[in-house]
Length: 592
Picture (cartoon, rainbow, N blue to C red):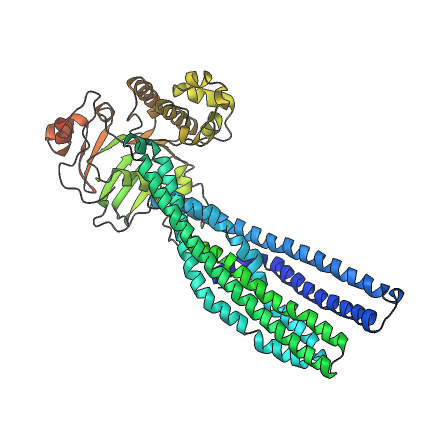
């Protein structure tokens, strides 16, 4: 069970690993000297009847050897843990970077709980493998060879027994290890499934309560937990069987050594000091391989986790920014954004989400995207945000292609207001400063005033230092939206992308945000996914999308006069608050 990918990660800490193995080998040498001193003391005291005064020197050396063995063992443990810590830090950094590079589009297809479990528990489970198992692989060969070198001059018969019996232990380990690997994989998959399902239940607990399905989910979690218990017990059963086999083999091997030594002592062909010295070393000869067997099962979970970690690291990334130096390529004002025959297809989708889209947006223009579900509106937003790369075609900012190497720099030009903005756990000030970390408190207050957020923030117990929970827990939807809008004022970017931020708000909050958006839009380029007639009618141009294609464009009154899909969408249903129904007047076959 040696993972080549994990070994590749150890290259950066190979000096620490060498020190760990070197100290372990030094501990083996000290053990040999310890056995030598002890055999001399016993031989002289009980057979030579030497007085205590003649043994004091040997006792001192024996105590020094014992203390030195403990000290070497402690340092070896420290260096081993440092190896594990540095590799875990490196892997966690790589994994988190890769998840950021993959972006929200990829993560939508993954279960949050399972990914979180891999990043946290999965990487932590590598510690035993890195700090115990890998050094023990080297020690299980080096220490027995060292002991063998000291045994051969004293007792060649015991040396032959060592050479014959030692290979049997790893052979039986390999046989049992195959079954252990299967059980460990099953255990890790069950744990990942349990973590993912538990987080899903927590996130959807309100929905489960409303539909009276919370008790049923308790049964599901109980069933998955029971499966995990069974797989854990099966894994432990194999581990205990392996431990039994190892202990039995090493005990029998040591017993064989003891029998042959005893027979030769009785026959008078071997002196007591050499016999006792070799007998003391017999358990130490088999100890490293026994420890390897113990660490094998403890480290197996780490290997299973590593498979999942490297699976995520191997996912091809379309928009890798980390491999390119970030360049400020938009220092001068740009004038146009152009889509040239842009096509995008999602994984495993039957039809492309966008098909040969041609689109040009001029600086300062206000543009709305309308169309049925699956028309490609969100895909255009994600492409423009640099979260995805077009399958075919190209997006240009003036004459500059929007490539992965400049995606991060380009996003500095964009303010994005989603329908459901996210607030991180922390203070309101912390959440506002995400848009401008270096802004002064006065500038932050001014942005909050423009967004209509300052008044309610001032009334909170600690004002801008009030803590909010994950995803804005403790604030209303309208308050969260105003804080997000204040972030937009703070960033002050020339391009604003919106996904109808006034949806699902009460009339008062909607009125405040509509007014703030008018101020935000001044002298800005705006692209909005629109669901409200009040928003659509104010736009300079409306793009009508269907099945990944732009089928019409123009001003609100112009499009209505044509009596096409836009006219049908607006006249089929207009609600009291001016929403048009986001329905499917024609068949839609693919997601946006």
